[in-house]
Length: 127
Image (spheres, helix red, strand yellow):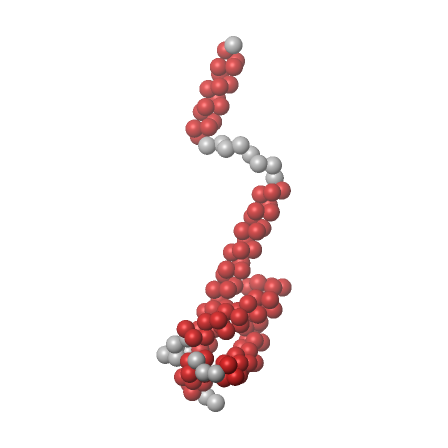
């Protein structure tokens, strides 16, 4: 079936019976699973398979929001891109937190704090 016809039938099939929805999602899985892995892998390295499964879950949950005036591939790759960005941001935050835990916490060294510490030190030295 040509992509344009499939694109226009997705909203109808998504609102159809449970069997219709299941068949639609199987078709999407068969058509896009491998493509999404190839799209995602360069960005997330070893986490590609897990992330693609997460992307497919998002597609399943949000298929009713797809508008056929846009290419389905644009819609699904936008979901994939956003999932990658979220994954990388989460991973960056975890890495940053882990790195922070590796170092002892340093006292706040704001200019005001340094001025107060210097003043206290001068007073101690005067006594």
